[in-house]
Amino acid sequence: MRTPVVMTLGLVFAPCALLLNLISTLAPGWRLVKGFRNQPVDVVLFQGLWDICREQSSRERECGQTDSLGYFAAEPVLAARGLMVTSLAITGLGLLLATLGVRCWRDEPHYVLAGVSGVVLFIAGLFSLIPVSWYNHFLGDRDVLPFEESPVTAQVSYSLVLGYLGSCLLLLGGFSLALSFAPWCEERCRRKEPPAHPRRSSISTVYVDWPEPALTPAIKYYSEGQHRPPPAQQPGATGKPKVGFPLPQPRLKTSYTNPVDVLDGERDRAARSQGASSRSTRPCQSSLPCDSDL
Image (cartoon, rainbow, N blue to C red):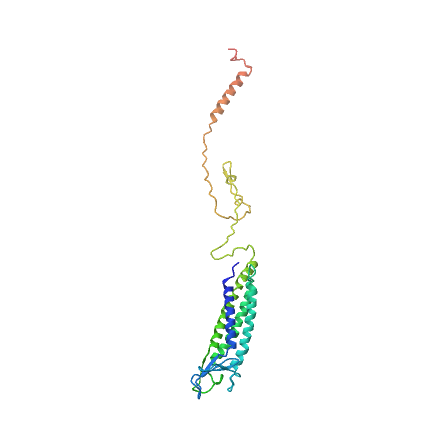
């Protein structure tokens, strides 16, 4: 697996920042003082956190100059000593954690350890930025950082610039490594999510639970040419309330009845034939001659 870009940037910025802060802490070049009376024009003093050096263009630099004005007892100098040393120690710890977290010898990086190293390096950057900014703020103040009266002037020297650069690189490298927490947080959030969750209802999504109507075949209500109401409409029936749209009902066909009984003539004819047959079979009991005798 390729090393993420944020980890690569952090591993590049942090060692550079450590080197710059180390030079800034040890080198006597936080402030440059020049313009002394009764001294050659090219004589300058380089004041740092631990030493004061005198330099002249025609001679070599001479360090270990006496502090007659109490420069080393000033609060910005004392605070810068402690904070810069602390920043260097924390930077070393952060680099150790970053090396273990980024894993040059493993398949996947340790995101949590790399993120912790980023936080540590960011704190180290703050520890180095505070004294550098504080010293720069009182650079020309004779009451806080004493130096000779006018026409002597004080200027920013190279160690202060290196301290600014190292602090900014530490902040950038720490922030870059702290972004390694993102994959770890994403993985933790995926584990906490349930495998399947119902869809959240919104304004545009409305769920309506329509009851299913109990439909009975329509032919059941039409038997023998008579229309019977559904069970829910019959008197005395307590059915469910109607749901949905009413079904169209077929119209009843009008039945036509013949007022004249077509069987009346048949009945008369059958009665006559039956009466005739009964007379022919009946015996002749009167004195008149019967039809059979004729």
